[in-house]
Length: 50
Image (cartoon, rainbow, N blue to C red; front, side):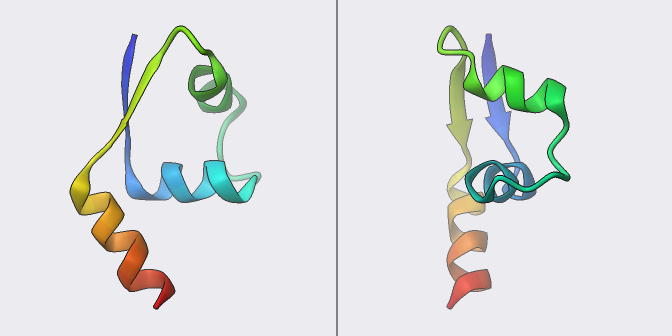
């Protein structure tokens, strides 16, 4: 399955945030799934943490 992570999902996953649902966590951690992050999400992360 292909999964496009939005900005908050991307941040929550890498921070281990409890706001990320267990279903989303399982999908992201499943090595059979291909994960994608939009370049816009990368830009958002950069401006949020600078």
